[in-house]
Image (cartoon, rainbow, N blue to C red; front, side):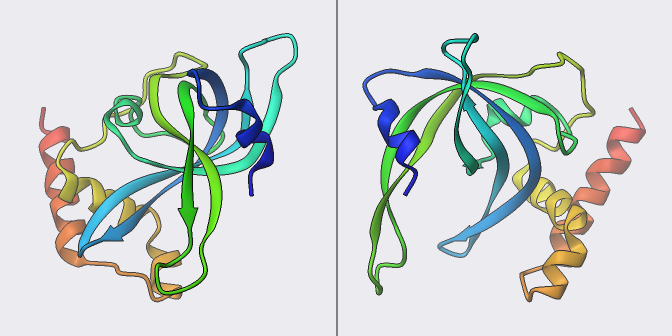
Length: 162
């Protein structure tokens, strides 16, 4: 359980800083949903004493994150979020309570740099994620669908042509 996250409380939103690690996806009811992994998550409400609250968190890859463009591992991201309690584990097995951060807002790159765009189309976006992680997905029996990858490649060709 993430005790430091729990201790923050869920009464208000807080400012956080974290490092981008990689993109991924989850499958929910047969649909791919893009995610991103942030590491070294720090509470920075008090900039004089930033406090690491967890080693990592997975987030849904929401529009706020997508607007940052194609992130590079190690990019420092700033965002506001609220602590959220959830049940961890499968419904057919024992579950436990854990804590994460939800509803990220005011998302930005600490460096202020501009990154190349990412597809707004979810199918092309999943294709981009599959291409970036191809070796991992194939080695670990995770879905790697050529249909999604081809949609990303089509999007890429249109972007180059602009």
